[in-house]
Length: 236
Ligand code: BTN
Image (cartoon, rainbow, N blue to C red):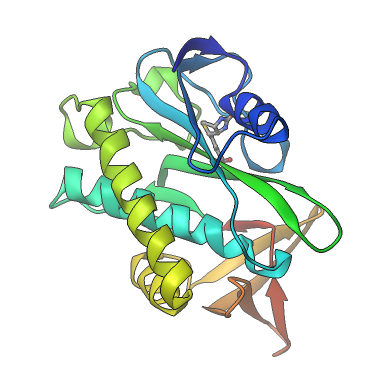
């Protein structure tokens, strides 16, 4: 646990390179260079959120690794829902946690791999717990903003870690079917007409499913089916 770091991702990643074992967790009160997906920043107001990275060494082929970010999204979404009930958060593909249309939490996965084998992955999770509106980028929210009370950040971290561990043990034993099913019940993307942004190209399509690799299945206006493993969904 650190007061201030650039990013918990960097510390977890370099610990992974030094041979740190699976389950190693780095958390911080604030980050000066918090990282988001697609080269974006993650704003980390001091003492107001849960910001941590966890090191995992999954025995999975590389094309199955994206499902671990779905696993993290399900764990975070369930944990938050257990705390803010009856309010509910939802998952925007692949792993943004929203309340309504505003972003409450984000997940970033970084991989250290050879051509065909992952050495380790680092999953970074940022949750806006007690942040106020003026501390956060536009379009964001926090648990406090939504429920109008403060929450224990330790409790939030605990609830997420319990679920991460449970789901991780479950998928290692039984595979990802149950997890993907749960992801589908929590998501707000499937069934919607969305704008998909990919390498600066934006196109409209209907999100119809996720496949067994966690890819988003899209149907374009001319009826073509395409599958995307990464990219950005802009949904209304
Ligand atoms: C996103 O939604 O774009 C992903 C955000 C991930 C933020 C977390 S906070 C803890 C960890 N350290 C980072 O620098 N990023 C992740």
